[in-house]
Amino acid sequence: MRFSGFLKILLLFIAPFLLKAQQRNFIPNASGKSTLSELQFAQNPALFKNIDSSILAVGYTPSRFGLTELATSELLFGRRFTDELVIAAQISGLGNELYNEISGTIHASLKTTENLTLGAGAQLSRISFKNEESDFTAQFHAGAILELTDILNAGFSLKNVTRAEYSESESVSQEADFGLGIEPFKNLFFDAGARILFNQSSGISLAASYKDFKYIHFSLAVLSNPRTAELQFAIPNFYNFTISGTAHYHDILGFSERIGIAYYF
Image 1 (tube, rainbow, N blue to C red):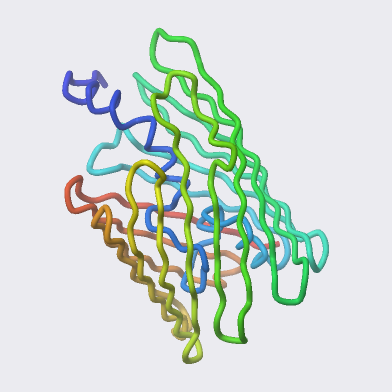
Image 2: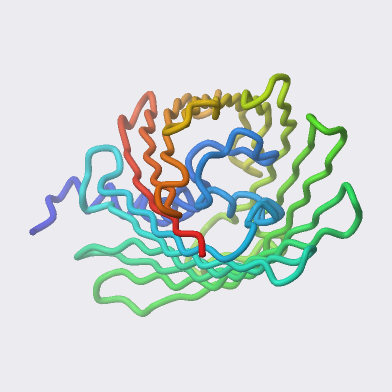
């Protein structure tokens, strides 16, 4: 497929942010109470504590904002090694005729005390445009989950701790997410959080999920800046598989969708 002039210009401006947006899993959720998909754990590496055994998961975004040329995909493998330690590896990629980017990350979560879990991630990314040399960057991420009570927790994550970026980039992408999560009633979860994109913008997020249905779970999330909404479903414990789907709406750019499947073994 040949790219229109408009699409080429669009890619040149927004492509460097697309894979980062995929890794942010759209709306942030640092505390993770209402999270339905294991593919979302990367937003706070401490959330990998929720992996009970071993997991293999794949995710695919067939289009972003109506453009199939901006499709992204990812692969996740994680394993619990001890009662305290979980390690996971994740690969994400976006590619088309003009532009491609691939990113690999090693995540780890470690339960340091009865109530505190720390997380870390080391990420190597490669970016290339057509007829240009590839560029690389290495970034490090950190996170934590603090269990305040049996029903209340707090989460924090900082992406790109060392403020590394591609050599041609004119700005540094660094993000901090804060959140509180609560389960006021059995199987009903709420999260409230804040996202800060340094030197760019900040926003407030709210999320809720209900996991009492036997065959399907639902969640709804909103973010104030940019104004976005997200509806997600998950079909859990289907012969050791979990199938998930997400519909995401951006008030300016439009709709994106995402599907995922995870296998526990």
